[in-house]
Amino acid sequence: MGGMSDVTRSLDLMRKAQGGDGDALNRLIARYYDRVRPIVRARLGSRLRRRVDSGDILQQTFETVCRTFDRFEVKDEASLIGWLAQIAERQIHDEHDRQVARKRSPDLEVEIDAAHEGDPGGAHPTLQGGAPEAPLIRREEAEILEDCLGDLSELYRELILLRDYAGHSWEEVARLTGRPSAAAARMMHAQARIELGRRVQERLR
Image (cartoon, rainbow, N blue to C red; front, side, top):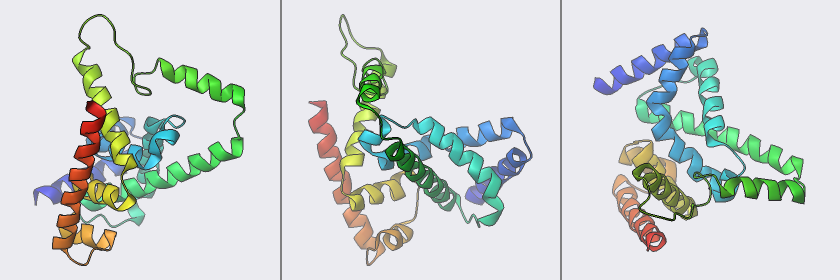
């Protein structure tokens, strides 16, 4: 019942946001931002993340959801998060197509790279003179995790995203990844987590 109650509240926020309630849209984004953002960033890939603002993608995603939510049957929070991720993925592909179409000039590439040198959300900053601030450490660790997650094989990445971020049941994870059973999905997920942990530890050394 608790899960359905959460979904009911989310649908209520969507209805209010569709009616132009900006506060409802902000509350909806706050409710799911931390769960959808890693999925978006993992699917963006490290190169595209340098050129696309994941915050903009998420804003567009939630606005699209609020316009079209009555076309989708939300069964539980996992299905809602999965739907959000699907819409975000379409936004990513559209943005990628726009990036390709623009065919950036070499001068603009240099400008982008220079801008990211001072961006704590881009390349890892070089810290001098004392210990780094805790939020900066967490941001850097999050970037490493996202990079490593994005570098996994598609199957491993999807197993982790579907189970750990979207919260799907093992049966649903098995169906979405083509595993023969929930037990098989669970075993493959464990292997994916081990591989992710190995890659993160290598980056942290």
